[in-house]
Length: 140
Image 1 (tube, rainbow, N blue to C red):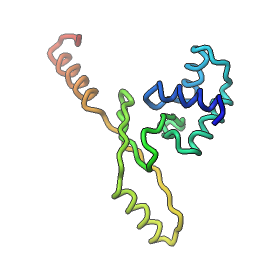
Image 2 (cartoon, helix red, strand yellow):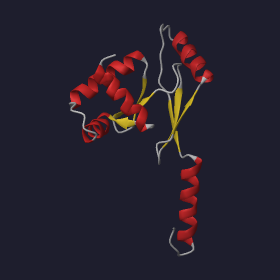
Image 3 (cartoon, helix red, strand yellow):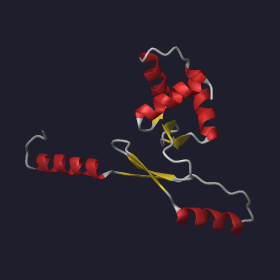
Image 4 (cartoon, one colour):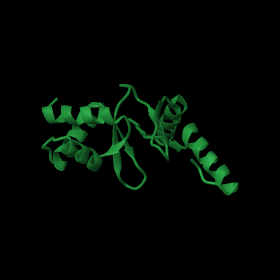
């Protein structure tokens, strides 16, 4: 691993959640690192190829990255509000992907599955805000 890759890996580990390459670059620059955006992208790609980080399509065409919590194949349950992410195994998904591939004669089948929702904390906060607003008050 190069020194730049290690710097990027450490910054991702500190972030604790999914971040874009641009946000990671800005964070590194504000911390005093002299690193270019292209170098950040290259480091992220190298780390992803090694399985050291998770890559998620944020839904707007942008990819976001997070230090991988496990070295095994997994999926993500992601809160749309705060970004809290839980790594989950999905044996049913694994079986479905393999069965669909076999049904159509495909070999070496891979897949990506991400599940989005609202975590309990954000759901409770939203419910609290709605309840206060319905009474005509303000939250806080």
